[in-house]
Image (cartoon, rainbow, N blue to C red; front, top):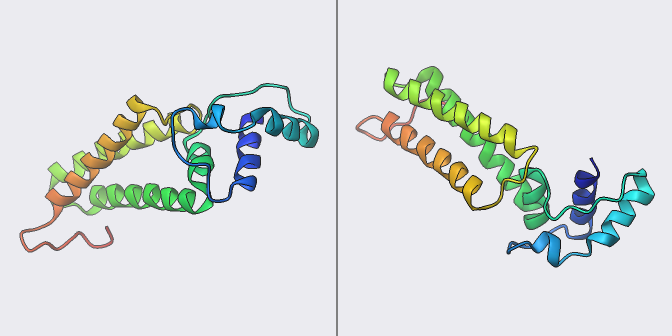
Length: 151
């Protein structure tokens, strides 16, 4: 819990984020200072982490509130897209693929909400799932380019 509180304190000080980079969270921020603030406010243990253990906090720290809102919007829109194609897709091929991609996406997000997920391998999985979802969406369009209602 203290790692999430530390991330929140950093987001308060850097509302536009600290930026991306290799281990920017651990090397370019004074984590001892933020750990001290969290201990004083909440009485948590003295543990310093080198990375937020949640994709949402990681994006929030690196991109700030605006970046976090845009990222959450993309996640919700992608979920909505997959779910709508699953319910109203044109044919069982698109529906089954939309369900499979959505299941993979949910599985990834469950892990990403509790573990560091912004390194190269989890990022590859995440963007592959997004790309698969977009492919299913494009296949689901008809010959005139109409998109499934609500997707």
